Image (cartoon, rainbow, N blue to C red):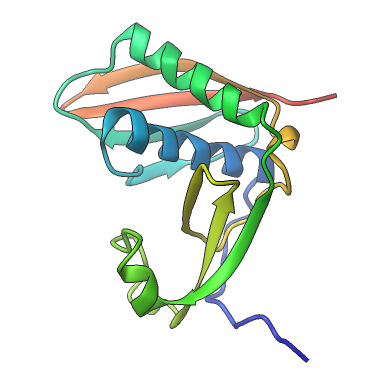
Length: 156
């Protein structure tokens, strides 16, 4: 009998569509802006925010392109899957700076189709079609940090 590896306990109860949207925002920021994934995120059901250290603020055109790209990915109905790999194997592929010091040796890698992958213990939807429409509701740049606040218009 195949057993899933035991992961660290997780004390967050994320709203799966919003948490999955956070992954898409992070992956899009890495691809389009060339920055790292958000170091500070606050994920809630109604609205969420992610902070990115950047040398200058994003333009309205960049913010619109990010929103459009994420909605394009959502519309592709990509499956969300996961795999387990060792931390040493993951270190060669992923940024593990955010892992807690007591992280387990086996890590769960969450994949959104072939668009994004990262270590995560949180809750996600099974397909991007469950996310709804992604909307950047505001953005603020202060002291070298770009904050992006986003909402979801959930599918009916």
